[in-house]
Length: 138
Length: 138
Image 1 (cartoon, rainbow over the protein chains, first blue to last red):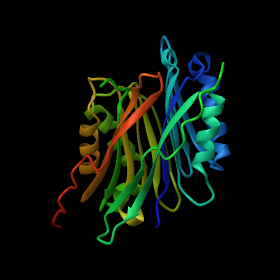
Image 2: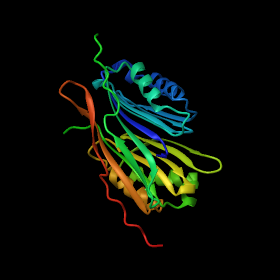
Image 3: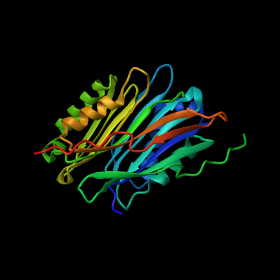
Image 4: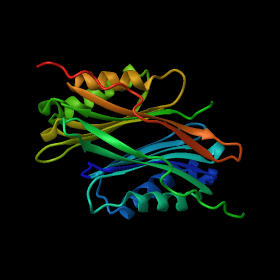
């Protein structure tokens, strides 16, 4: 099945509030995650909210990674979307989850840009494709 | 059900190849789409590929919009992800589809950041939440 990319929609819980507040730290994690996926970084755009929270995107030659953080809840909504056989968005996902100190991770995988016989593009959704991480002991 | 946002994963087909190639045009469409959703634009990052194709993201105060285009196929993979009761990502989605000349649109809606009783965040997927557009006559 030919696709135009794999998009992982990911909810991270139990993350370190301090890490989720640090815009430079979050940017570094997401840039490193892109490299873990073997993607080529083209542009980055990050913003720190007041009093807290970070939003940011890494545009890669193979689509994008994005993150939005709620430090007060230890929660981050993260997307890892890459095209091409040379990239692996799951490596980026697992790396970011680990680096942000997540204690649980819920993911759905969307295979995007699948051509139908009528020339229309569709996608296929694999709900809860990833495993929840075991709750770490403190 | 309290969520941290609505994320529309959208495949557009039959778009104008000329429009999908024009990085300034695509940026304008996505910025206008953000305004249609009643979102506040914080940052934009767009890239034009050679020989063709555009990737770009609009970071908004309420999450992000993103687009990746394949002009040679009339295809664009677009995401509309907004938080807050004051925004409506479906308005952005329908606006962008219209402005890019799409003849069909396939969407899945993900309600993100739903807190479970155990403190872990999850999401709920509504597959093919939007209607396919009627094929337009030429």
